[in-house]
Amino acid sequence: MVGHLATAHGSPSATLVLPAKNLADESEDPEFLLSELAHIRDGLLRAGRGDITKIALIGPSSRPDHELDYRFVQMLPGPEPAFELRGSCGHSILAACSAASRSGELPPLHSGQRIRVNVLNNGDSVECSVEATGNGQERLSASFLLRPPVPLGDLLLFGSPRTELPHRDAVVEVTAASMGNPYVFVRAADFGVCGPEDLFADDYALFSALSEVRRTAQDALGWPSGVFPKIAALLPLGPGSLAARAISVPSWHPTLALTGAVCLAAATCVPGTLPHQLAGAGNGGHLRVRTPGRWATVTTRTEGAVPALTEVGVRGTTVTYHGPARIIAPAPSGNRARPQQ
Image (cartoon, rainbow, N blue to C red; front, side):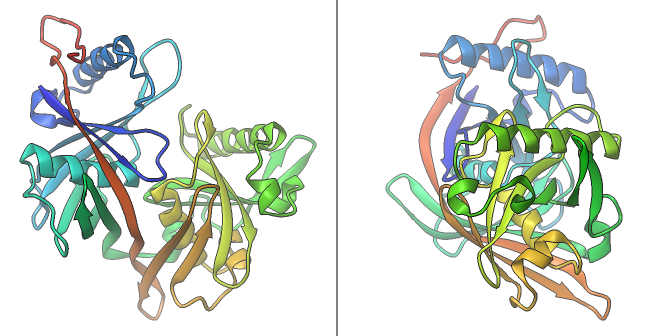
């Protein structure tokens, strides 16, 4: 089968986009899909492409008013094949739209075009808008649509805006929220960080401390070992602006996952959360987020006397299309998949 490679700016990895019809259906035979993914992972390693850690499986959507079904696969580090299929990846959604326009799953992209993506991993509905195209690149925006609207309190994983978790010989205050993907947010100042330069430094002590808090939150939620919840440390930069540093297991994220920006912006809408306190109230549904690699602008919309979230959007992200990647599909006989040179 022919896959396609594309990278959204700010992602730690290119995404290998594959036709879902050529692989097992995760909802019907998850074990067989995992074995097929293991063959594909082996083929990537044999081809010297161990840098690719993200796979998107796409096809025509079965969901009304949606054009593309999308399933995200995160390849986990380690000597043995391991995969995370519970979450999503906004950068890979955009990469999938770029690749789908080349594979025939979507018409060629053009300015003003809107594509609704059905995220099979978690049921999200994401509308991708094309801002510009040219020279093997597209600039795309992504809006996470909530139909019906989600009450703000339902975003909180522990049921409260702030929760204390044990950390070493003390406690640390966190906000745990889920929108796009589940995240734990902490004050960077609680870990001795005084400014953006400290936050964005390659500080092993900070990385270790945040990793410990992430695992503690995972245990407190009763979740199995894996990449969720993710974690990000925050610094205030003035009304409506935050600096954020996130971990993308097993290393620092080069920017902030698109779903991380979405979750952070959603959490700022909930009174009493750490993101709400640090960003300040009254930002009019606009949040500016500074990361090691870029600034991002995220918008939120709420409605109702008891506010409920209806939409979270991230403005244009550039996607670069790298070209086709020929893969020998895993066969029922167990033949190993490998990229063609």
